[in-house]
Image 1: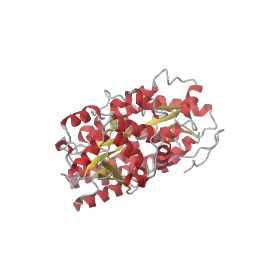
Image 2 (image 1 turned 180 degrees about the horizontal axis):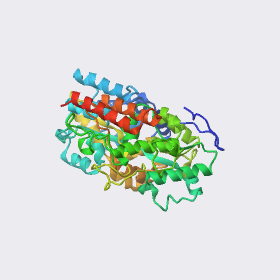
Image 3 (image 1 turned 120 degrees about the vertical axis):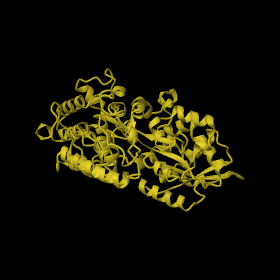
Image 4 (image 1 turned 45 degrees about the vertical axis):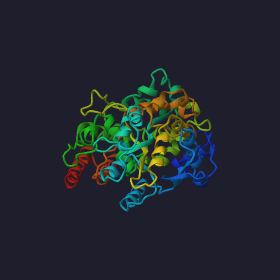
Length: 487
């Protein structure tokens, strides 16, 4: 994938997809990659644990195997990574078929933090609180990111999956252009304090005006897809103090009995903000005091990879994306230390927000967990693999060799982690994002609700309807879906 066009004075840079990023970094990592098939060789007279994962990780099997052994896993236990579908919804469907059929393998399942709860509610995963050592459970509970853990627990609070790596979006920006325009992100500590959306809009507009060869101010993902409802819009709305269902307390239900709060002023103002960013003060829904003309209408068709290309090509000042984009943009062949990173901007503080957990520099929660097939005949060995994955050595190896963030938030402050090329420079920003992450409100109703949210938000962003009318329509649709699926 390459950028759509480049009008900058620098040569175009190729975009990097998530898949390409994992492959390229893993191939250069210090652990080395001898080929995916190599990891299927079980140690003599040993046991092979099968892990349903993805093609990216299958191609990096040696990285995982060596990291596990060096983290204390008995060398008689080998890991066989099974590549799976590329689309996360297809992965969930495949797991559901396997577990419903009571298949004994694979032993381990890599589950999306966005739908792990679905498998938990259907009682299809092993209760790890009943099988992992108490000391290990205490370590996980005390050191892992709380929001990430919330998507791995059942309604009873028991742990059914262990976070493998979390994903937190941040705001990437051209620090060289921002500083040249007279701003001081280092002195103002943007890396950890972020800035308000109003200031963000004026900084971006100013930098654009000073750099006529840069066509875009702020780029993100606003196509009509899951990423809009789970992530970008969720962040913008929450950073304004709004919520889908009355705050974090009701993220996971009860369906049909929780308040529906999208048709309220904070959410409407977050929509007006994006309209202002696109169209300026000429938009009938514009927010007074905000700079406009900084977001291209092209974002209405962009997802993660397509939105990253223009930024890497030097065609944007600010860019919202996931950690893989940092590794691409912060590489010496791209922007290097001229890349700045900060938590997602916000409009109101948590103290100013109406709902608990809203406000502040909110980041959508992404990432994947590891769960255990309750029908596995290799339970002891499988649990040993899980335990090895919780070790600091293993998590630092994945950060160093693949660029995956550790689920243990303590490691973000460690000397070893901060010495990792590129990613180590931005761990403070990523830690703040993780501490302020918000999950999507996954319940039995989410698949239906997500589609309606993306449809209505996209219509508002596009100018097909007003923020007020769009949210009134969405409120009505969510109420119908909630009542239909009431538990």
